Length: 227
Image 1 (tube, rainbow, N blue to C red):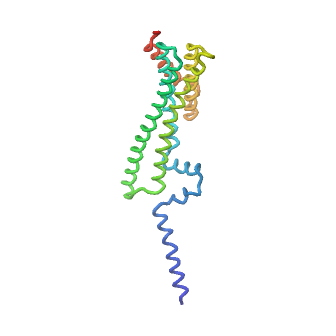
Image 2: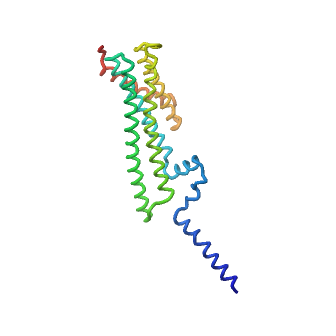
Image 3: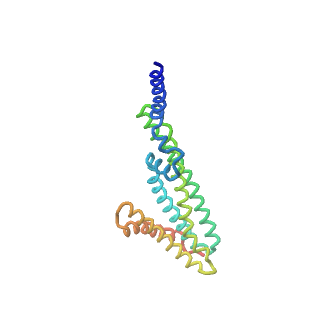
């Protein structure tokens, strides 16, 4: 007589925590600590689209960094032939771009993710918790970091030839090589975008190079040819 009630009680007690776990956070087990970093990142990407967001930030940041430093070089070359000055100014510009990009992207993404979360909560009439909150934090930090690293790395590229002045290259040739390296980098960056959009790689690459050429001409005219 006592076995049946015990069985029923056990069934009820065992069923309750399962229903609670399902209602609170259905994705907690899938993204639990047993998963590796790559699997967790992929799971968070499904929730936030952080990979596509970071790709956009990388392209924007790299384009800004390379073109800004090239403009600085071409503008300053008309007034100074000191490679140390070019290196110091270029490095400072790259670092400043990196810092501003990180915090700018962080604030922008934080606001956008908060707005999306608030909209989702209003639609669901409940507070968003668990994996979604962690995914938003992950997306915000990753996108901000990518947006900061991209202009720093791309901005350092045009400075490489000036490390060889005057032992290997004269100053004038270093300026030319800086421009060529920047154009080549931007071409491959555009070609990469072409592979994503399934468009002509040459056309996609030359679009960015055309913008860089126009910018180079403008900065040369502004810099002049003073000694």
